[in-house]
Image (cartoon, rainbow, N blue to C red; front, side, top):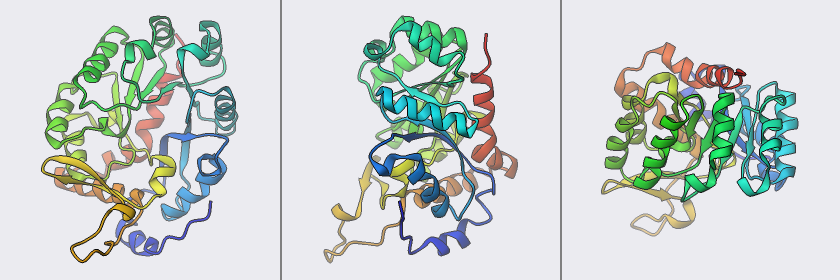
Length: 299
């Protein structure tokens, strides 16, 4: 996937000293098709965009299709980093899930957006994940009070499992984020990624509320290479893209990659909070590696 990035050199000068040479991309969603979602396409494109950094990645299935899980397993074996299999309770047996999680070094399961986590994560599956101490990655909005309550219940009921909520919880307003994230401050087996979060205010809330080692850098995969960002309007998070955004004269204002908007937001939030360099280095690399080491430890 070749991409033209007109402002890449400008952002390289801007972020060159901030982004460390070692970067780990947590739970990069991939699939054998379409081409834009393959690891073979995303790997060079993301590295090129991030100033030719050799980005190491953990791969996660973009869906629960068996072919996608086989693809992730192969990539994970090549990378030497345990992957995340797509999970749907009606597409796998308990025996098959245990076979995937235990000896094959899968780090855990990834679940797409779900309105009912209790149904999407049945008791038999969670008991297995908890016994093995594996990961459960959730793509949900914690602005939904029911979803937030279910996440808290899961964390308490299965203390040996490690739960990861993508995109800082996908809160819909800054007020939701400020109040909601502090509610999870002491839920120690809950982690958050920064995938495609482009508002510094949202990240400032995340970094202020959650322990540093529980926050993981993630590019967001193919979406990070799109032009666009999110903006705050009257407390609400609003998506902005070139095709739907016009200025007062009817012209499209300049847009850059979501990846650069995310890095800008991360740096702004960290500077405002006075985050030290060691925590910045941990955030971009070590936090995810340490979580994976814990998550792959057998009981």
